[in-house]
Length: 151
Image (cartoon, rainbow, N blue to C red; front, side, top):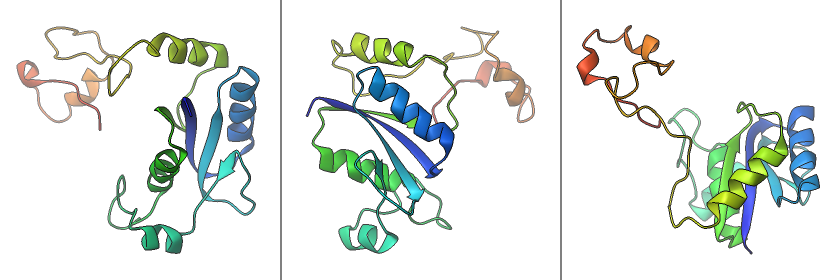
């Protein structure tokens, strides 16, 4: 299997259903891995917490109070899919044109990177206009120590 695109969500919503359908219509092999799902299907996948416990595939991306999440289930699904490349997208990420996502995926096919993500401002000094810096002021006023990371 080449590559797959996985939406991650707590529940199946009309928004997620339309995103999966739109991506599929644009030729992207797309799935949604859902925490709470009554009727799984080929494109809408879930696993029980008991199943995940049995597999020992737990607590990868979650806080202790939520031992098993859709992230655990999505990484398990990706592993089982044997896809060469996997794209993950949380349900709260907004974009309005599936063709743009497809073009990003196609452009990245020639990369040997382990992680492809939107570039962040490395430091305040290199990009003082990055919009998240205003949130940093709540923590410290020492701008020379500010740097961006993925959480």
